[in-house]
Length: 245
Ligand code: PGA
Image (cartoon, rainbow, N blue to C red; front, top):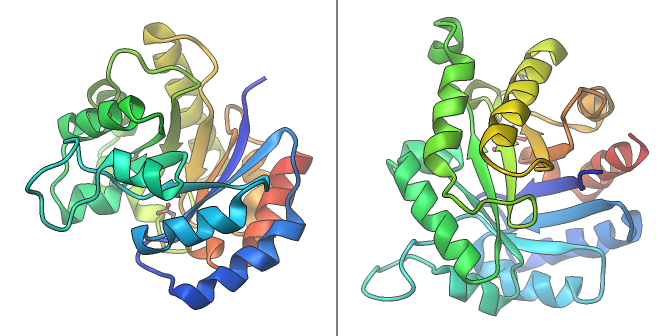
């Protein structure tokens, strides 16, 4: 069975006081078949990792540079994330692709850096609204998977997150049939090139009220949660819905 994963992406939110959300979250999650991950801003990784130590919560980064080290002002390497206590890193989020011009090739290079440093890569793909309206969603996702995943991807070193760009932070979600269509196609696409068994997360306006129905969709193994991950009560409820699915 594929690992069920509820991952929270805090994006550029969170100060020291946000550690209280982790204190509130820990009693709501338990060890077992459903993994919980929180990806805070880089400034909070080591303090969250200290809180999560010995607890059923993994900590992740939101991006890393492809290079091991060097003259890259403001960037963070995969080794630094690992050193700070991260187990995984989100790569190729659509906000990185849009704000920083990241290409599939950039994402693939960062994925290799993540693996080299023992981090699981959470690789994000997703179509824009214009691409969905043009009827090319599946081809866009196939191309992103082909370009963003290096040879050597396995269910152990890589998690895939399908995040329609138009559903992120908008309160809009695809229909359950639309989610199923993409997840079934991703599953088939990945099986052709790699071993079977990748965990496939859906992301985009997941909240406690829609989590259970999304987790019942075929080939959905969990969620990458933005806004609703900032509140322990919401993220805990999403984790519980996944654990019950
Ligand atoms: P959202 O963000 O849950 O706030 O829509 C999801 C994401 O960008 O990972």
